[in-house]
Image (cartoon, rainbow, N blue to C red; front, side):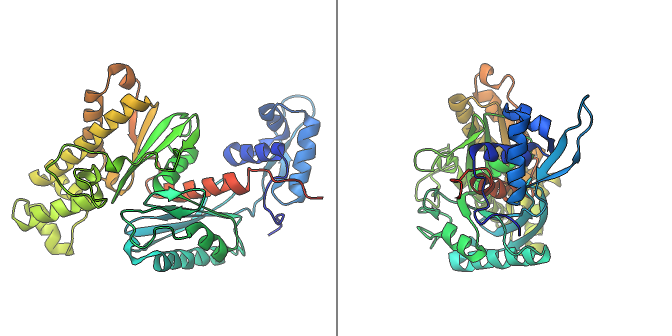
Length: 402
């Protein structure tokens, strides 16, 4: 690749310019000057330098606005990022261009409990296949998400309940070393929130919550357009908030956590119990056909009119909605996005979440509050991973080299 060794902007102005091109490009020099409030001469000089180091390119004349025609500017064609979204039972690896459009992805069934060596080895093999197919020797950066608490500064998980053997493992450094590029690590729901902000329904939202419903349950918090992690990176860990229940033990060791009733694994366990004791004919039939049940099977059975499956889905949505109501009262967001694999149960689940949230929140907070399903059910984590690392390696200046 033609990029500088650092792969970064050299000045703050260049960083701002690259961020504009990533999020809104291609743009004319005139538009860039207006957006950044600088002169045409300054834009010309900065674009020239970014072109020299292989981060930007001029793509021809812009549409006439009267007078001399401006020149269109875009990110370099060969910029590539890698996003890796690791879940409890599968992972997805994707390659994006500089504007974070997904060019290719690969999904692999992989149990997080196999440990970091196996799971990361699987992810690296998939990444290399995608990069080889795209004829990319080295990406500019890689962003990784995992389903557990993360020390963002160290790039390592911290006592993740769903991830035995991962505590303190240097995921960021391992992945960066393997792919030979800068790497970042964050909680998976934070990446999903960033993906939704970049290319999903939250593109125009400044203050929103992204609630991920998968094997675990988490919440990405975006304030003023920026991801909020909290002091130690634990913000949004709503899956372990206490809800009404019967004393069920959660994987974290506490009782009556939301995740213990509404997480994907919990729904699967409840579905299997209903199938085994004869309460649900549809779930029993699905179990006999497939050998195991998932949260998605609850939706299938409910769609076929199974009363027990419908009840399981309603109770799941209501519990999540009750927690969402608490978040609304505390945070007063402008938008709530529901994503993750369990959200694939669709609008029936969404209706229960909305009903509970709206009923338990003050009208002032919910009068104009959309609660919607994610626009990126498939690749949100990949886009978010690419977005996160792009903020580090593309749109962050380093001292100018002599």
